[in-house]
Length: 260
Image (tube, rainbow, N blue to C red; front, side):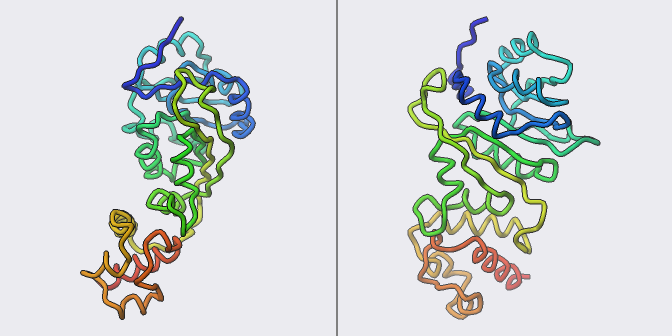
């Protein structure tokens, strides 16, 4: 069966067996693992992975791919013809192990999909994704760099981040114009940062980075005075890209207490 990629689904099928092998080596799947794959596609990861684990669940929006995978499925493969952005992990985690998530993600939904999954992080052990290299560079970026921003901070709150290896455009069909990177995100089980109110924290980070060229003193002038910055030991002349995650937490907690 010949399956062509559909642009509306952002499909670029992985066709390089060497990269598939590197992915499996990175995953280190064990027989008792319960996996969720986002976007099974033509089965380049699905088919070898189902041989190594007790249960593999695949969420795939393209009905053609579902029909194809059905012809290759073993008893441990569960297929869901759904939009991953709307998928509820509770459907497959009741009374089971924490999920391990893997996927060659469409570039156009990668960031919202990661945030969707992080909202359900209590059900997840780790996540491994093939992403646009530029997105991974932003995820792993350090303070003081141009790529450091909201994505870097919000994923740092919940995960340990490891960029594993880069992947050439020639490893995909159709061939994209950009390089990809395979990344591992280990969900932190401990409360790494004592954030008083997560919604407030998310709003603050999003707000200041929407004006990332402004200093904190200018962007927060309507809610913070110089004495407030002194109280949290943060220089108001700094731009948001210069602030460590822990400083954002300190700032968010201070504002939360200030407005209680």
